[in-house]
Image (cartoon, rainbow, N blue to C red; front, side):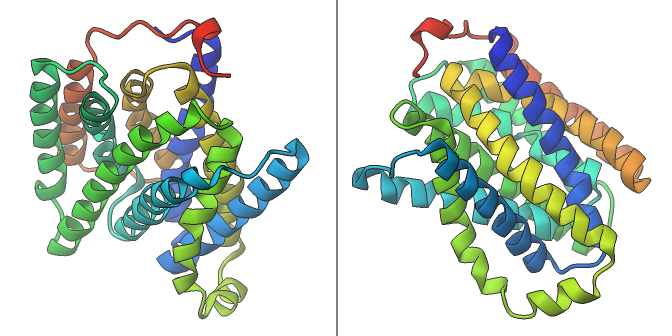
Length: 295
């Protein structure tokens, strides 16, 4: 069980990331997906630039630059790109249930890459979660919905790779600096969406623009730093377990913010997907004592 400080980091991150699903849908009400991505992470990049300068953090060693760049492309460009384009058709709560399968992939990848715990329970949980995702993706909606849902499945896999690949760097470099460099690297490919950005923003409803500002400052910049701190203090597979609460929070926020109520097939599949995650992590690994955690 993680210590209280780690739980505080995880809890704040969960709340912010859960709200991001509804925030993306709100922003898409007036902006194109590419412009939402570029504006969101452009804002996050500026926030992190000011934050790192205030903290006077050093530049990363040259040997880490390529790894930081690759993690940024996977965790920001790929994950956020698939999620944002997917949410054009998929409601916020439904999308969050699909992404909820990420902890299963994280546990599997952590076992393969970081020598963390792996058991038959993990494989069974993976199968159960994938069954739930299949129910969500193909149990309702049009062909366009199915295609967008598959994009969000890709996003779940990308974020699992991001969590696991990021963790080793957190033992070598401060969490804020890792987050900043990963975000900057992941934002650069999004410049492909720059044409037409100013015109799109100028004609977008204020609610859509402010949603992107919120997404850039809190769910992007602040939440990613908090998550990196959590990963410094506990195993990747264990910390990501708490993401199974994400879809329930996201569904509630989407209902209040957007008035979205997911279809019964999405709820049923979501419960099955989350059950697979719980199955994988039924016996939590003991957290690393704070005194032994990387500083």
